[in-house]
Length: 405
Image (cartoon, rainbow, N blue to C red; front, side, top):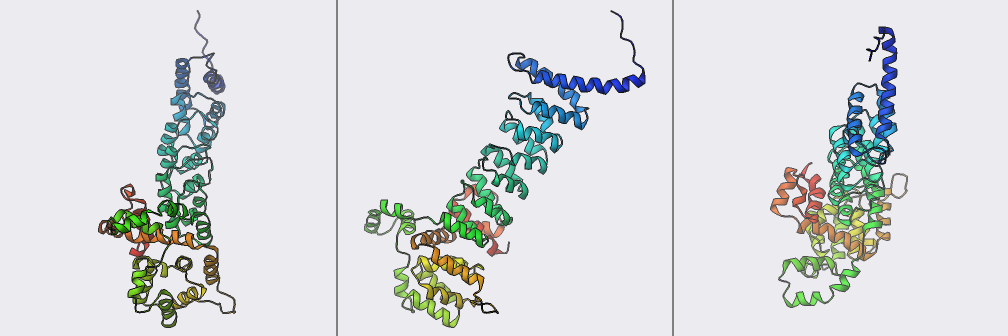
């Protein structure tokens, strides 16, 4: 057979790209053949050759190949890896349209590329919990927001807890997070402390649950615990959360004010003091640290929750508001919008549901606190949250800002 004739330089410069384009298309066609026409080994070898050509191909050529390969149900691994690490507009064709990409493919792409690629992955349909966790590890607000708005993505509880923690800093993600079906009351209750007015309303409407079922199943257990002298601290704490009565009768009997309403009235007249705040907290059935958190909240809604949960009326709510020197009217005589929102919060909540929120706050902000946990809060040790229970994690997040963070 005779040797092929050498092409003149000017012909080669024109024919080379044409030949390359044609060969890239043909090889992509071969990779796209159904299993009845090509076996797995042949597809893999063809894919390897295509990878080598694409390394030196133009951006447009790589994009054409990505368009051709995106609909495939079987894609050579080396080819997928290369295209997923390409420019976002090339990789995005596979990320968006290629159903054959595995969790491993997407996870590797998320780790080995940049925020633009991770944003594309966050918008992909049907993301698994594994891929979602990896995307959230980077703490990128745009990616997190996109993932939370992706209704077909699935989030693990570990991932949700991480987003709850992030929402303390990036508060714009609170709204999409509150719409996620994976979010549980424990996360929503702690988010309440830094959420905006509309998000707080959503939390109370969606997550302020009743304890009626728990009260029914545990009704006879209260008598058992009483017979044992309430000696078991585990059952005692759980029953304190479940029981219907909110006020602390023993604290009321010891109080020099004679009752909760009287103490609140005194605060309304004289102003709130540290001693009065402690006294009101004890009689309301919460620890002083919980009471301080409620009284110090800038939004004011926790005051409404405290009053409704303890059975106090609108007059006591107003007295508490005045004791904190909070405005009721503006300069033009209109009702102060914050005070108006607090009154609406009081009216919208049922007693039992308000008690659930108040008791979870008290549980997480007091019962869950240990010397080790307080040290972790002060030191800012949010890493390794898995070592803590749900109430402990809630306490770490809710009290973090109180320690100057």
